[in-house]
Image (tube, rainbow, N blue to C red; front, side, top):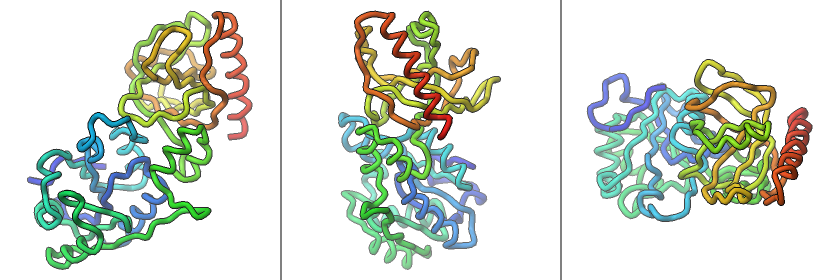
Length: 309
């Protein structure tokens, strides 16, 4: 998959795609329908047009973190879906200031030379979100590209949405989130140095930061782990603690992952950690011995859960 960060000066090989357009946070099942529809809309390479940072981050930089995945994780997921071109356009004053007409002409028609654009039925675009799908269709006829609006999809009377998935994760309902996503919710990122207390306790962990991401319910999870880089690329099971480590006075949430039956150096490598089942809430223990006993119990419960996952 080729990733492009501008709509100007693209080579001919990167122009003329059929694109699905949106933020695609989580790449859930509703997004999948939009992408699959785009792939059938024209005899052209499949592209995704999205924005980085998310427009919501640009307009409300001090708001609570809300993203289900970072740009790296989103790109990895889209590549698995057969996307050939990812147009990850920088969202800032220039894009935010374009009227719907200017966006359609400057970005879609002249910049990317799109053959066809597919969006969800609730899509809005342009300065002050002035454009809707009918606006886009009218502009497409004017500037020479086709437009398809895909009805929202869901199950049980509920549309698949990033908001509903965030709610499920906040409540620890990771299997409900998985049903809407079509895949386990994953946290991806680099392994950083921590306090190394887990190793001292006999339970070494890989530590990952969570900046910019929506926080699932704090607590302990059964997880599936893919090591994406380095000499020890593998997939394995594990148990993870997502929280602030109250026993040690920490207040910055992070993810600490213990990989079962693995003993290696993962510092600086990138992991993809799938939350499979919420086991218990984060807790503060009276002493280290009680904590170690609980970690062992958590690991045993995680192994039992994952044996049937």
